[in-house]
Structures are given as C-alpha cells and as structure tokens.
Amino acid sequence: MGANGRRFLAWCAGLACAGASVVVGCRAADTDGITPVPQMLAFLPWLLVPTGLGVLCALLARWWPGLLWGAVLLGLLAWFLEPYGTAGAPGGPAVASVRVLAANVEFGNGTPALIAAVRRERPDVVFVSECDPACEARLGANAGYPHREAVPGTGSTGSLILSGFPLRGTRGVPGTMGMPGAVADVRGHAVRLQLAHPMPPVPGQVGVWREELAALRDFAARGGRAPTILAGDFNASQDHASFRRVLDAGLRDAARLTDDDRTPTWPSRTAPALGVQIDHVLVSREFSARRTRFLDLAGTDHRAVLADLTLHGPG
Image (tube, rainbow, N blue to C red; front, top):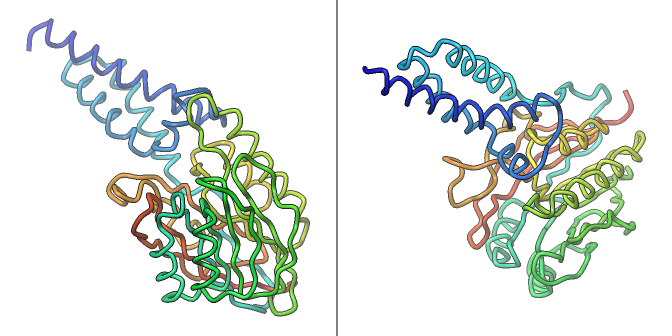
C-alpha cells in the first residue's frame, strides 16, 4: 500500500475514533453532554462498530498512536457494556407476588394489542404511556381492572395506571406528558406506584428531558423505606447519566436483576437486531425480580416490559 493509501486510512481511523471519543468521554465523565451526545449515548454499544473499523484502518495504515487510541476506546466501551447497579436480593421474607406490565401504546395505536396481552398475561399492575381518551375508554371496557389512576390527554400526553389492587391516587410527578402516581394496597402493604414518561431528548428539548428525569429521581429519593415501583417509557438507557441518577436514588432495574438489561425495547420494528432499552420497570430494594419478558405489541414502536416481582418484608 502506498503512502497516500495509508494516509487515507489513518484519516478514516482518526475520524472514527474522534467521534466515538466524544461520546465515550461524556459517558466516562458521567454527563449526558449536549446534542448529539445524548442521542448517541442511547446507542452506545453500537459504537463498537465504527471504533472497530477505526482500529482496523489504523492497523492497515501502520498508524500506531491511532491503534492505541482505538484499543483504549474499545476497552472503555467493553467496560461500559457491563450492567449498571447492584443486584443483591432483599433479606426479608416474601410477602406478595406482583406482576407488572409497562407499555407505550404510541398515541393509542397499540391499544388492541395491549388488551390482548393483558388478557393473556394477567398482570396485577399495568402502566400505559401515550394512552389517549379512546385508549383509556377501551382499556376500561375490556381490560377488566377495578382500579385506575390516569392523567387524561391526547396524543402522547395521556397516561394510565390500571391495578387489581386498591389504589389511592397521589399527585404524581409533573411533566410535559402525563405521569400519574398512586399508592397500592398490595395484600396489606402500601406500595408507591409512579408512571414514568419524561420528554425524549430530541434536539431543543434535552434540558426538559433532564429536568423531568431529575423530578423522577426526586420522587424515588422521597420514598425512604416505602416499597416503590417506578415504570414506563423513560426515554433513557443505562448509558445516560440522568437515568443512572434515578437508579442511584435507591431503585434497581428489574431487567438488570434478571440479566436482561441490554434487551432492546425501542424501536420495536428493528429490535432486537438494532435498538435500545428505554422502557423500564424500576423497583426499590424491598423487591426481587424472578423474570423479565419483552412483548411485541402491534401498532406501537415500543416493546412492552413484563416483570414478575416479589415483595419482601423487613429482614
């Protein structure tokens, strides 16, 4: 290979590593940065592809500093692919089983598929994002749940919690899109329920996204020792610092507890081949998780998350 060919390959390697370095640097610095970094952080594992190509180009170009650069980036990416958060089990006795389903029905379009999934899986609590008035009415008539708490709205702003357990409504977490909250009486144990649906980190709305995730973090931090389930479409993955701060407030991801923390939920049309997990069921340390499944629902771009949980009493 001539000098011009090696120079071109070195240029390609530098370009690939420079782009990945910005995103990986923000991940290492525990910040989400500015557009386009938050959007790229969601797909952090896929940076292995351009970084690997950059390493290959550096090797062919015999550009040894670039090869070292790319190798360091690959090592950091491999490190960050590891699950985030502790996965220890509660020490107290099991007092109740709770099956939770979290689904974004995309402007209500996935409502028929959700009704079928609810009838088949029989979750105890259902968190529904983007549930418009027609969605709410259809679920009320066909899902068979005696208790509900909703923030009515059109398009993406409506949300709903359905429960087989008695509910007492709470103020919920304020946000651009509806995020209702409630306290459920789970066989004599008060469990805080909160639906999560912060603004997505689209350009121009990253600040709002951060603020609404911070509000969810504050909700989690106020829980003390009260059992808590925080579930829904977080528009964030474990590679976002703003989401990790929600976990650091005392919650664990059910998918993490069952070793499914990298299973994609969005966009459903390309998952699991290409996607990211932005739909989550988060629980306080009074819960353990036995199983997490991801359900394909026709009519929506999100996969639903179905988590089988166990509530534990004091140890």
